[in-house]
Image (cartoon, rainbow, N blue to C red; front, side, top):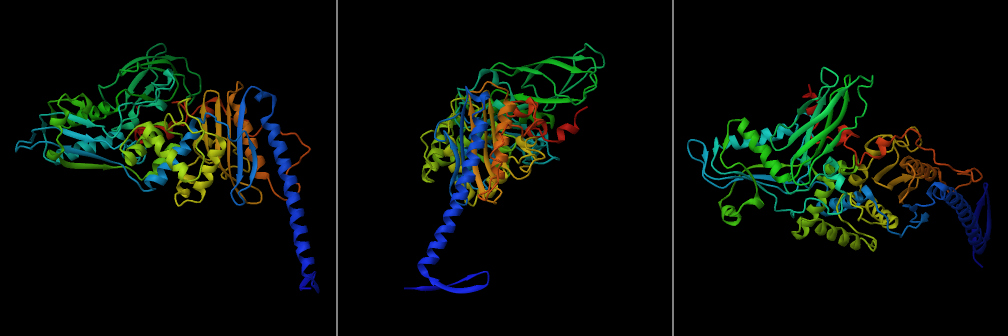
Length: 560
């Protein structure tokens, strides 16, 4: 028989080895049993939240995974397909970081295709070649709004010695297909900023910007200041000045109307006489033509005459002959911020345009197919290579705006778990909204133990509310979680509160005893101050105004 030394409270003794093994097994069995009890308590309380009467006609899909032990702490319909809304951006951004790299940069190049005469006349065209860059706007440098970027481009053309252009300003967007939006978006989305068209060449996120200021007299039309001066968009101002309300910063209900195939924008609503200047923005049709029109107008402001106007490359009847690339000469390159910065814009304020541009970019870079379908192919293949089942995956766009998008909570958690151990995982994690701090979670879970500690992506379209990301248990175990609810008919605030309460329960969870008061019923009360504006910010041009503003902070200073 083999004997082992064993010390108990300082007393050393010799015992048979089988007795030591029995003691170890007994201790581990007791710990496992305690863990089972605590998991059962967590399950019971989470079930109380998701089985509440308010959800009797809705569907919840949930999965919670301990990233240290790979144990599933809780699951409910985790393998069923759900509409993810903006949780789809987790897929777009994760695969973009892994495929393109944290420091990938877009390049937009300006070429000429003719000689420059001594008098400064260009005997040809200016061609602006896009690469799908979503970031040509004033977001990243407070001293360089969108108008400043256009001035840089015009200055580069003038620096080449050009004072007159016999040809046109041509926008080359051939890196992407000519399908500017998913065909399954709701018709009433298209005029809004959150449904901006994707295009291989885009400026100011394919959005116009205006500021409304009350008129001097009640009943008169508000003053309209266009922040990107252009004739490309025609504004019909029907916003009326009304009596003061004493709330100069209140949100306003301004209706935006624009037909699908033109750029005549009608603004309707009211602005109180004591209201501060109010900025809003909306989408344009044909982002490529919009971009080169803005450049042509800036050139003409700087005294450079353009004889041939501004053209989308697809409108050229002699495209192949006119655009022989062996005759082109590069005169300027605009370089985007690194991808890790762009991904933060996708996830924190939930910027749809960026996400759609990234998905098409994936298809273009990998397969020369700059389309939603090409991007979905890259995502599907990437997930498969990571060992993630893609049975439920359907991507009609990169943003989650389409109701034809489908994922499941299990697949989402597996993606989060995979990214947690990747070199790009830090950039991915830091791109997510932080509870009570920033992005679409800045008002949720504020003043709770989750504040500053939960990084998660929200998702909202009508009757869909999702929250997926990372948290830490009381035992300091990192967990990945996904909570998706579809087809509910109660106020979305209750979905917020249910998800927030579940997140707090998760953070309180411990394998040790008495982590949760098992005899107390749980109700969803985590976020009592959330307003409708907060949970519709992924669809509202009025919420997160600073975060979502394409023009940059400088345009606020230009307001009258």
